[in-house]
Image (cartoon, rainbow, N blue to C red):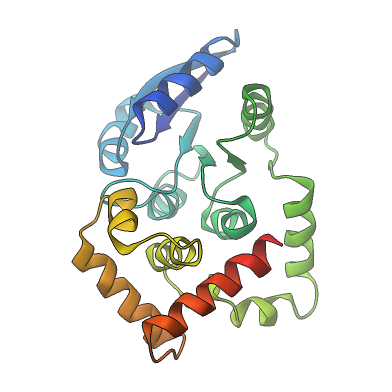
Length: 217
């Protein structure tokens, strides 16, 4: 049996690298490569893939929103996130949005192939550390712990802006990374401050840095 796979990533080199690794497996066929969620949703009916590999940061609709759309409209198509975003910060949210796994782009090609195979075989692929976190979050009190976290309070795009702010990245550079305008990033930051009850940009920066360090530590 051959599995048809689509790749949704706005970085051409990443798409090509993934495609080469996957096409090297005798039972994998990369049926299409897309650079946006909108493009994927337009073609998915005709392609009917077995698996969609999705990046989080996409122009327009984010990868997280694409996961939710696919979970609702195409529940039989398995999804796997392959992203540069830290797994510690995003894997749990991606799994809850419908992804069957999460792999960081820094992982070796054989790890990504292993993750694809595990997801296609009906499993869920995350690192051992994230697996432990997922189990803890399901334990008594886990949901209450999460409800106090930016992971629950912020929207998907707000969380991206919050994370990048905590990494010390400038507003202009965040805008470039997320394919958005500087004004839009400033609007997101204003909403984040309101949701987290922060009074100033300095407080936002401090809270974001503390959160990134605590989650990744």
